[in-house]
Figure 1 (cartoon, one colour):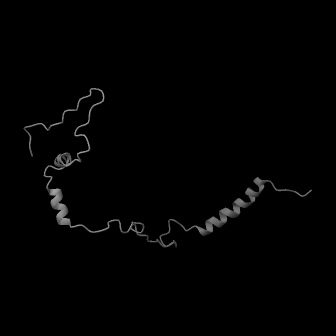
Figure 2 (cartoon, helix red, strand yellow; figure 1 turned 135 degrees about the horizontal axis):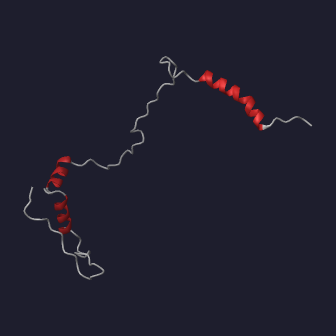
Figure 3 (tube, one colour; figure 1 turned 120 degrees about the vertical axis):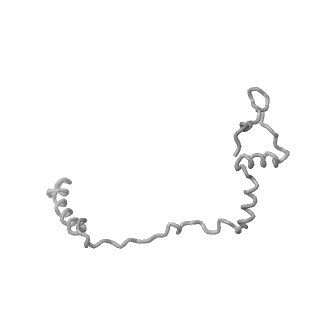
Length: 112
């Protein structure tokens, strides 16, 4: 019968060798002249999709279109309400009461 080393004995024999090898290959962190691997540059734009916009739009026209909504989102909502397709109902019906909700109006008195 051959003597078989236990797994713990193998670890015990390998530990000093591994620690000695690691001590020789790791640079001294306190030494500013220690050799280090060069930093690699990778652009953050390398994976940016190309050709997302099929065409460039006229920015002046886009600004004029957005500029028609002087009060921002409120005017946009009113414009969307006026330009709804006729196939959609104009106001949703509340299922519990069976009536249409009242529109929310801005308080009067304070204007910008």
